[in-house]
Image (cartoon, rainbow, N blue to C red; front, side, top):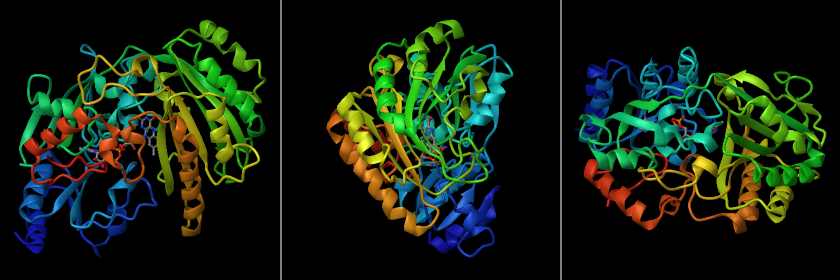
Length: 455
Ligand SMILES: Cc1cc2nc3c(=O)[nH]c(=O)nc-3n(C[C@H](O)[C@H](O)[C@H](O)COP(=O)(O)OP(=O)(O)OC[C@H]3O[C@@H](n4cnc5c(N)ncnc54)[C@H](O)[C@@H]3O)c2cc1C
């Protein structure tokens, strides 16, 4: 089938929207959450049904095109410009059903975390959601899923009960431990190369409130604060998940005056411990005398405000890394690029504490935890082209500076640049992922941001 004929068939058969270059709404249709990414697919389909997903895979395959599923475009950057590819947006498939008796959520393939956390909270239940409410459940879960409850509950993917997917042959399949166990294994950690996910069922937890907040210190105190926080992480139980960061807020009217244009070293904490026990644990950090301390009991669904992530799409250049340990030398390496006295273009450099239930072992997906003790992520905002080179240089310099402390492996969801994906996995896992890809998508129809090629 020619590309021209494929577009005609899609226009005839789809229930959802088909947008091509030059059509009204083209720029909006092809736009990712990361506004810096310039996606130029052959066409954009916004699916209105599972049948639409089947149609796109059937017609795209027949025309020799590729198909890239995207829920939000939070991790669109590694995918490139999408030449020869239909961009399949799941963003209209956001249905959420909560079954309180079984404590599970059944969500459609384009659901975002805020859709789930608010619905679950109505039943006193919590999901292992990401730090931003507008991150897609599917993309997040296929790569791992590090939540504010991660050290007590592990990666989100360990709690998936079942997927509904459309495979490259356009068949709808129920995927769980007993049905397509090889695909069930690969979907939990191998990313989006294997099938288009149209629904996920996963466990929820009976948590209504958490004790959470941030201790703000002036950026000038970053050395003292980051060292104290890193030592403190070695003393806390698994019920405590925390993050240490260096953040430079832009001077913009949308921010409150106490943040706008100011720079901080921040420790963010979320815990299911009661506040009295948590306050005991927090004493050494509070003894440093934070300029502000927002710790409070909050409804669990409000955890998506804790990290102060951008509330709407933004143009960014970012990348992440795993950190084996955070000793004084490693902290100096981070400070040398983004610490006080450095004219850094980075909005934020975050280090999340890992370990606890995130420690690998005992699960049955392609990954079941993350190696290393910390997970780093650096972001710079790039609203205009001249902003790109300094941010790119700062992110590269940071990755170079921390390289002596990086363990083997990588967290797929925090890899924001085109990467050698084989280096994310051990050799046996990589070989098995490629076998599963060959079994379900031998012609590499499905294009993901972190591709696993068929064997
Ligand atoms: C501001 C910000 C905050 C973040 N916070 C966290 C966090 O707290 N914890 C964490 O672990 N990660 C976090 N992330 C990383 C996030 O998990 C990844 O960016 C993830 O890929 C986002 O998934 P998405 O569906 O929103 O993005 P997309 O860019 O839409 O998807 C990424 C990839 O996932 C695959 N995919 C998406 N949907 C489907 C589908 N329905 N079927 C098949 N494949 C699909 C595709 O291969 C796609 O290329 C954050 C990222 C950002 C930018």
